[in-house]
Image (cartoon, rainbow, N blue to C red; front, top):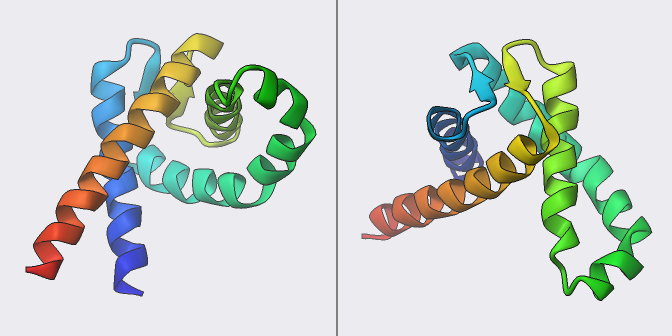
Length: 116
């Protein structure tokens, strides 16, 4: 349970950091918290279906189409959650990429600190 909470907090921080970096991506703290939960649900339920449906395109692009899918999932989250705003498709793709990288780094740092 503790690992899940740490990853969730890392995702919230990653969303807030990304909003500070990427023009066209804006969140409130409440939007980041609720958006993180909703994005997690979307990534767990909808994203796998989209990945399977777009498998031929993903194979042709050597997996790069996954970035587009991640952007679409972020854009979907922004369309549902108030206080979680993405101004365009490419802002969503860039934001999704940065959120993934920052979240992975934060999770790795926290994991290393927890193991020591």
